[in-house]
Length: 478
Image (cartoon, rainbow, N blue to C red; front, side):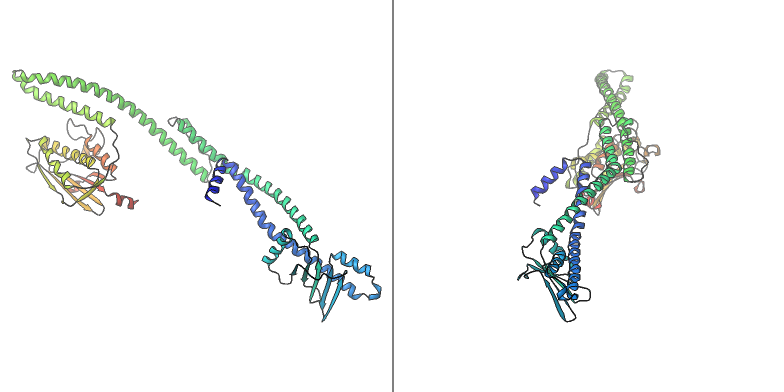
């Protein structure tokens, strides 16, 4: 079958539903089974028909051979041959040969059929030759006999072919009847056991997808213990979970929209307050001069909080555009972050091999490192270091197909109550006035790279461990 014919057959089948396809396939398979039954049956029918004729021929020949010649007329001999359906009959046994012929024996036959040691392949082939390609000339049939070496007769194929056609017709009608009954039973069984449950599943999926937040659309599993029952239970669990998550996300989206609007208006008001506060610099009152810097600092933190919240609420991080880049230059740029607290004098140390390459998005990797290092700078500026001069130490190494980055500081460490929600938005800040968004943003970006960011307390008081696997190693791991 050509590719075009296969495609056409697939298109035709696609026009039928599952039930119609099952019915067609059932009828097809039953008919194939009937064909496989018919082929040996018709060959066996032909063999039996010829053996019956040989047995009758032997009886007729033995009767003629045993009777005195003067007691049998030529008319009786003809009637015996006609009863057998043969033109000539010959027996061979006990060293002699008997011949009974009706008129002249045909000088030539179309085929000799020896039934004494016939193979089934030959019998099947001869049977279909008789049906599809009958010869005009008679055939010679040889078979075993009772008390003789063999029985031989010459007969026309037309009576045999007519009998085989009648047998084939009966087989055809019986096959059609059996096929219809079997196909109907199989169809009804499959319709009840498989098709109806599958339609229920697909119908529920379509109905649930139209309004997935409606809990009443969740499928009610039956008590079946087969694969259909397991599929119903799995679908019910999935739909229940999905409906709950969608309802929760809708509520969070509405809450986020409200918070964004509040933050937007609050930011405008704080900006106005900041502008008014700037004028206090020109007031010579000592109390005002003492309060003004603290007020400005508070307003700056409030505005930064509003802007960060708005940015986190509307941002959807794109997939990283990864490529192999040297890590050392990215780490070197972090040293400028210590200028955020120049009065503290934070030292920055980096130990990164110059030839260390990392498979990452440069911009997103920089954002991750900036968020973590900025948190360390802010922590050291508020608490200082119990070990002398504040210091931030960044190191990196390769472990197989993964790059490991360690960011340490010698501050007092992260409070225990902050560790539980370290990577949770708005909850993980250990500093007064912090937004708690730096580490969640860093965790999201690292997760897009297939890596992890964790607090590794075994490396020091505060040490964040970032792992970025290569894309090749991630694919091999899967």
